[in-house]
Amino acid sequence: MSGPAFLLRLSLITLAAILVAFAWQWAPMLQSMILAQRAEPRVVTPRGELAEIEQATVALFEAARGSVVHITTTERVIDPWTRSALQVPRGTGSGFFWDEFGHVVTNHHVIANASAAFVRLADGRSYRAALVGASPAHDLAVLRIGVALARPQPLPIGTSADLRVGQSVFAIGNPFGLDWTLTTGIVSALNRDLRTDGQVLEGLIQTDAAINPGNSGGPLLDSAGRVIGVNTAIVSPSGAFSGIGFAVPIDVVNRVVPRLIATGRYVRAGLGVRVDEALNAALAQRTGTTGVFVLGVEPGSAAARAGIRPAQVDRDGTIRPGDVLLAIDGQAVGRPAELIALLERLTPGARVTVAILREGRRIEVAVELDAVR
Image (cartoon, rainbow, N blue to C red; front, side, top):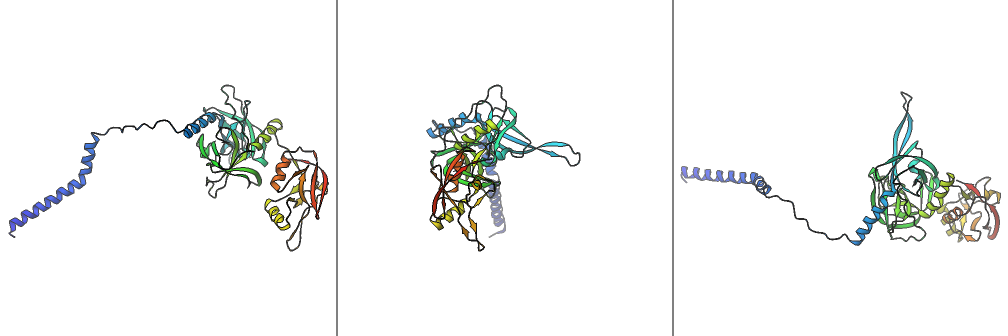
């Protein structure tokens, strides 16, 4: 091939490569510039009406939102340098209006150890709250605020006695400070016991509706918009929601809150016996006996005055059962949770008849119940 022809061909190939490179580099930009001249908003596709279940959920939230509040607390600290007293933020939680007198129900742990609490309404108004009463044993507390105008309506109250696993539930609260958040789920289980902060909360509702820090104290609603529980705790290694949340059943709330409003505290009937759910189940299986095994008796308690005998522990660690509680005033108790639930319904100072299994014999003893907090 002659020199001029080769150089011509090489020049053409080089030019073609340059054109290809230019097109590869600039074609998208040129295309974008051309298309930008023709860019218009997309035509909206009509969706029609919301599904019936969506409409029901929206209506439920809109009806309940105004009765749910955001609670913030502060703590009084002393500046180590100036010795001045300061109010510093401590935590947040949720709550809801219980009645038309400005009483707000929340969790005890939301306001525990706080020096002040502030309640913010859905319309943005904020009030300093007064503590009316609290029951750490139930993780419940009642605050009160003075709202002169446009006072939010209390939420309707349901019942937890007829709840069924699988029914829909709705939680409203302020998780992580994100105001008035709605999460949905189902009742996952009933009658759960949970140990938290040195207390054992019994008979809780378990739900998979997302409950996170800040949800505490908010209402758990059924599909009719009635309060069926007070969201109280989560089980999570990270501290955030992992699929298991708990709520205090409304039947407990409806028993405790009126007493807190009336007297500032919840006093319940007690026997003064120590029991344990896990050990009770093991002893019941070992002995074939259904009842509540008394593991300990508090000195000076109702049980001590009645002569109720606790279990003994041998040197090798073997537990020798003592008295087994079978019934109170004819109502059978098969496990510690049932005993506690029964005592919750009785009055401190009441005289009751306790059926006991002692050394294979059923006996009955008269007991005057204690008043315990």
